[in-house]
Length: 550
Image (cartoon, rainbow, N blue to C red; front, top):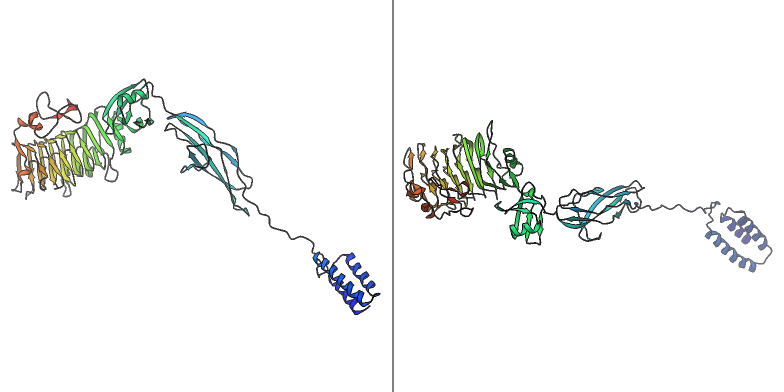
């Protein structure tokens, strides 16, 4: 056998194919080539190169073993799309009904974790929904407070962290329609109030919404009454009624005490309440850290038998602290004994900040501090008023007493505060360190006491050095006390003489003049039978009273 043929044979065997036919074919080729000339050998060499290439293409290896087994590839697995087997159900309700929960049932078989998010929309689409905060379970309770049609749907998401492809997949439920119809007002008897809880009318709503609109008129009104609906209404955009849940009627002491639990509410007193107290007496409504900011309409009624003995507590009164927007009106407070606190003490409010007291009075007993060196800011109606107003109100207590800053209406009048058309007939206002006034112990220059009368019998300053005491105001900034009257027989007792600006004294009037309607009309007081004309003269003589007392 020639070297060329031998080399070719070796090359063929060197391909390493393990199959018998390949080996046998190579041997036969070598035998055939040995009988031919070199030209034929060259031609056949080309053929064997092609065969070799074919064998190589077929995956023959040099090891002599077949490598035809295919290499195994990694399979891609995505998180499974949730299957929603139970859809939320549409329903129709009336305002205020308790709705059934919307719910879906969803599942996956890949051991993923399902999460939920509910949406609502005004259209029957799942593309423009608004996410509902906190609605992240498989069920959701729709609201029935407002008469409207709303569509809801939920997005269910499967999260599978073991997936080799997409680890999350989502499905969207069908939309569900929730229709809330307006609550019919037929057969309701309701009371219609404005924002200040002035009663506009009592409505026998036999004709429903039409009766309310016709009687109450265009505007925003509050409904109250045992049978009043608790939901809100809006009639054609012109008339809005806020349900009874927004107005709380107070008929007894427990309901009055509950005001502390909702300091921004709207309250109306439905009758007089005689307090039954023990221990340290009444617990004031509102504190420095939790202020009363609501509306309290006494409704022309009074709270009687008030007493408080909290000598180590600041901000003491029926209301301890009235904050921004807080209003008290048409309320009488009768003190039985004394209202005692450490600092900032008043019959109605210990401290009045950016609030109002209107058409109200305090009568009887003593309002005082604890005689400590840190005491003061004592007033028959309010201990201190800051950026606040007291209007058309009066006090007829027996004694107001404090270390300093004591007054027959307010102890300290500061910020931009105004006491207007008020009078004090407190028997005695007493201080031990000055700033003593028949209306206010102190008035800063940005505040004012005007058109008011001081009818106190006596002002007493027992300090060794008298500081600021006078019939209307102990101290008043320039122009802060003007156009006021004072009882000509009022006595002022001090240990030493002190500054007494003439403007702080008020114009003298006799007791007879101060029991005459004309005297008050000269100061611009309005006499009549409503909140805008709140004053009347008592039939048997005396100083003015409020119209709702007659």
